[in-house]
Image 1 (cartoon, rainbow, N blue to C red):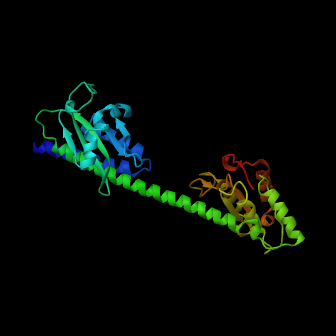
Image 2 (cartoon, rainbow, N blue to C red; image 1 turned 90 degrees about the horizontal axis):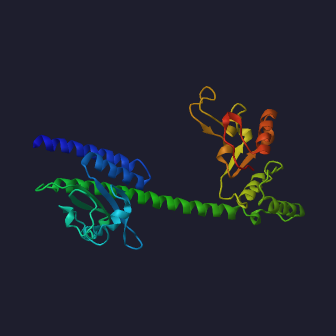
Image 3 (tube, one colour; image 1 turned 180 degrees about the horizontal axis):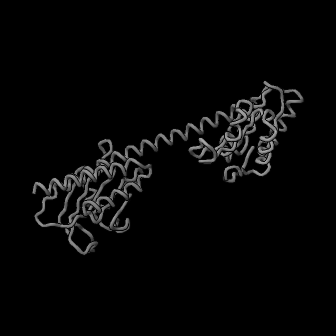
Length: 328
């Protein structure tokens, strides 16, 4: 008996390790929960299992992951909608019912063999948010306390995963809102009205900007150093349909001649000695947005020819790079 318990304890510990890795090694919580239920069947004979969560809006239970029965079949079992699971959520305590035939299932049988139904609450911040339930093979006069304790541990780990994923989702939403806010600030900052100058020459520049910004064309901006070429380029980008896509600035004069091509076009793993992994070039990083090539005239003639081909054909062929959609 002691040896059997030792084997069971080792198996449960192994399951805890597998489940922990499954829950916290991916951002896809639904897929992780499906995998968890598969592990419970594989290691502990839980032939049917389900994870349900409360809907924040309606307060109704919905099936997040199911194994052994379809989500629809679980929903048909009355203990899910208004029976045992609801009681578990209200009390915050697990329930074990051997045999499961005592459950109100409208006279329908979901299994050919008698089983034991165990349900444990999933509690986040002291508030039940869902439940983990499973059917185990029924054994007469068997003490299911260890199984209940084990399922509670599984429910606790699910609760921690739910908490982490909610925090990640909240942080992601915050970053999205911050990104939108910053883009709006950039759009306002680089609005045409913020460019100082009301001479006839500047008015012609404003007219050209209003025509160029909505288009999908390559723009050449000429002028002496300090005359605001980059300001004009950013104004074009942030007042164009591509404003939500990246604007990648490349200071051509600052890049050594030996590195300029790999920086602009990128390279595949093994393309040359030292290329240990694939690197995206500045053009590929700007795919769907715009590239700002500052100091284009400082590049060598051979590099300018390659850039001209990119601008004309809207594609990269060096190192089998993928065809890209658009460039500035």
